[in-house]
Length: 103
Length: 103
DNA sequence: CTTACATATAAACCTTTACTTATATAATTA
DNA sequence: TAATTATATAAGTAAAGGTTTATATGTAAG
Image 1 (spheres, chains in turn brown, purple, green, yellow):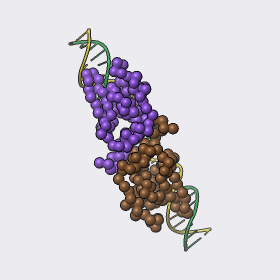
Image 2: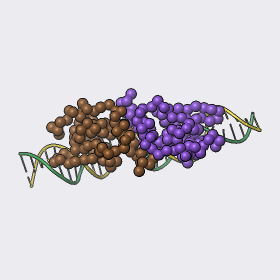
Image 3: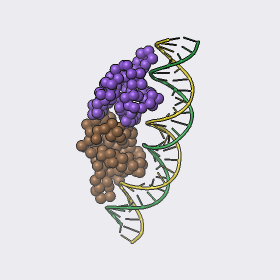
Image 4: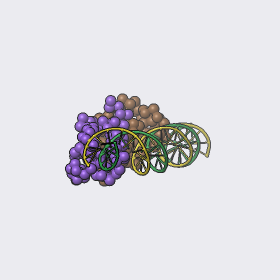
C-alpha cells in the first residue's frame, strides 16, 4: 500500500465535486442517502453510486437502521485526506438542515 | 477560488499515477522533458501532454534553457498538495540518475 | 543552410467516468 | 399481504481521459 497507483486511485475518489461534497457533509455528521441527495440537490441513484465507490475505497462506512442506511466518514484514513477536507469550505449549514426527520 | 469544483479539478491533476510521479520527481529537482520521460520509462509526447496539464493547473512552471525546457514544481500551491507529496514514496533515486548529461 | 535534437501539438483510438432512467431488493406500515 | 418508502443495481449514453503515432516548431551545431 501507499504505492503511486494506490494513492492516485484514492485521490481519484476525491477528485470529483459530488464525492468531495459528500465527504464534506459526512465530516459534519452521518447521514442517510436521501438526505445527502437532498442536500446536494442530486438524485438518489447518483448519490448511491458515488457512495458505493467511496465505500469500496474505504473512505466511508455504512450502518443500516431500519429503512435507512446511514453513511459516515471512515476515520482511519490517510493523513492527506483530512488535510484536503480541512481546506474545503464547510458543509455544516447544509448538514444541519437534516435532523433525521426529512425522508 | 477554493470552491469544490476548483479543488476537485486540482485533485484530478494529482489523481493520475504518471502525473503524481512527475510531481514526485520535480519535488527533488527541476528536470527536462526527456529526462522525465526516461525516468518514468514513458514517451516524450505522453510526458509533454501531462506537463501541459500540470502547467495549466499551475502546479509546475517551465524555463527554457537552449534546446531544453526545464520543469519545476510551483511552490506557491495549496497546503494539501505538499501534504500529498510527502505521503508518497520518494523519487530521489530516479531523479539523481539525471545530472544534465543524458539528453 | 542543412542536419540533428528537444519539445509541442494534433489526430485517432480506446477506456473510463458521471449521470440518467428504469427496475429490483429490502424494510415499514396499514 | 398490499402499499409505501429507502436504497441498490443495471443498462444506456454522452463526455472526458490517457496513450500512441505522426507531424510541426524551435534551437543548436556543423
